[in-house]
Structure formats: structure tokens, C-alpha cells
Length: 75
Image 1 (cartoon, helix red, strand yellow):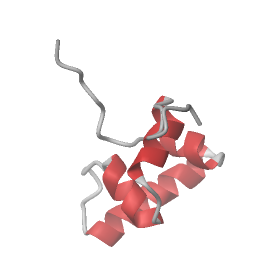
Image 2: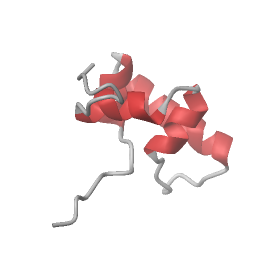
Image 3: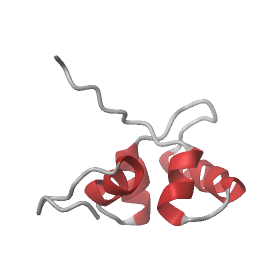
């Protein structure tokens, strides 16, 4: 069976990562769209979010999805 992995980040995910409000999360998504030159209807990937904030993709995925890190421990 093929494992499906979500690539898009949503406001709820940003709320989990940052511990901030939904309105803050939507503002961040808008800032990333402007930074990337995307239109309002374009989605933001987890990779784009991580690049914008200068953090590792694995750290974002670990926070959002509860994945284990490279050492095998769940952070």
C-alpha cells in the first residue's frame, strides 16, 4: 500500500507549531504567499513554510504530525 503524506500546511498546523492564534496563522500564510509571489488561492507547502521561517522540515512535520526525528525519538 502506498503511504500518502500531506504536503500542504494549514492555519491549524501553524497554530500547533507556534502556539499562536488562528488569526496569526492566517497572517503568516499571507506573508508567505507575498514572499513567494503566490496568489490568494495558491496553497503553501510545509517545505515553503519551513524555508520562510528558517527551520527544518522534519521539525515542522514532527510538531504537526507527531513523526519521529532522525534519532527515532518522538519530540
